[in-house]
Length: 165
Image 1 (cartoon, rainbow, N blue to C red):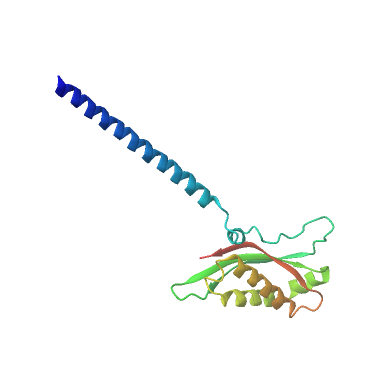
Image 2 (image 1 turned 120 degrees about the vertical axis):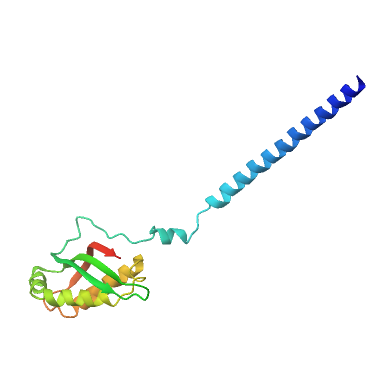
């Protein structure tokens, strides 16, 4: 009978010890989860820039006049790549300053397409993968096309289709 009481006491002690250790582990896991949540939740100030939150949005209000637009048909051009063959399949629209400019662009369409194809063909696969590379390409297109236009200027370039593969 004395042995039964000692076994019962040791069994109760083991149960209590198991419950205490289990409770402590549970509390530690909860604390670690809460700490991890708050540490990982903090916003990275540079992350907003990468996600496009600071990208300027053009003001498309009724006060701003939209110029005449000319579509440049779809084209495919090989681009510079060290590892394998890559190409761009794109079509775009250019916004112009006046109707006279539209007529000139339509007459000079072979020159416009040539300028666009040469600019894109001299870009690397990596340059055309990110937003900054595409913005740079647009700026270069505007500058290049404006260099031979006489009746007006290109206001903006809009990609209506752009696939890099």
